Image (cartoon, rainbow, N blue to C red; front, side):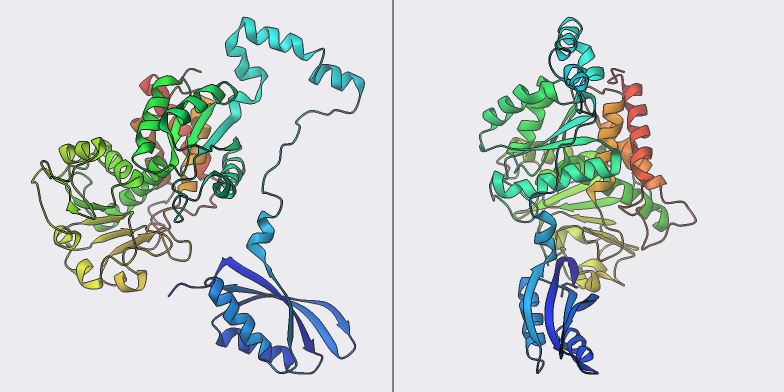
Length: 467
């Protein structure tokens, strides 16, 4: 069962009799319903009644209703209002545009806009590279989606995807000082998406593709990388892959195994699963078997219906192993799941090689519940913030773009991504490294600068830096 979290946090405005012990009864009702009691504030006292705002974390929407019902059942108590704190956070949107220069006098106006701006336009027309020094392009990333693969919600459309893209823009700014703007496109057509991004590219220093479903995301990224001279990065693929590699490097240090000698099973061969495999291959892993609903991918399998799966079968599973996930997982050193919840049991983990490493990253419910894998696996990572070792993309994409923008990289290479992964891994010092601490916190402010420096260095070494 999921634990209460701030994502389902509500404030109950309660009218409570002003008598000793009454609030204790309310708190008991909340606890008995499984709620996590937070802040309690007195709003006002009205004679024999106290009005209190009571903040509670719940598991899901139904759990919120159960908690409200429990509080309402306390004799004399009335719940006057329920405010969803997550909805309040999004009220009016989460981002805005702010000016960096004052605009208070005629002089300010004449320099920031007409007529003075014409001189800047002519300078850029004469020397196109000046756009990087005289506009926001050098620090601006477009966050582009069509809303077809949003979080665990699937194809919900571009408008419903906008809150996620706004959130992404916040993360860029907060962790790496990168300005980002959401662009939600009302089309699923690959040609139209590519054409649209090409047309808006002059105003941006990089393109972050987000929540675009596979296999279209592979073609869109590949075509844009070929067409543009700025970095194009599909975070669902590469951001996840970078953090997975970072976590795996440290996990292998703990169990004393080598990246080139382990057997890895990857389950779920969409955008993230394919990118993770590419990253592991680039880093030196040789024995990888990928599984999807039909079981293990192997050369000659009759259901290799897409070019990316055909590529996958050619690059992995050298022994052409066949079978379902449970069969393939036996004897494996590492399991990496980016698929669906509750696919494995404790017995499946116990059948892996000694000191098994389990990255069950399906969100919100992992491929094997943490509590079930605990004790059977030596090291466990999930995509959740309420368990140790959260694989969180925020550790990677802000620093990767910061480094790419700083050196004006024309693209982001596998070498740059591997450098980012190693920089993240190194943020956990040898004396800190432990089974429940293999990757740094998402709020460690030193991660993005370290990643940026490593990425810029790799870009220069590979000849893709233009500055």
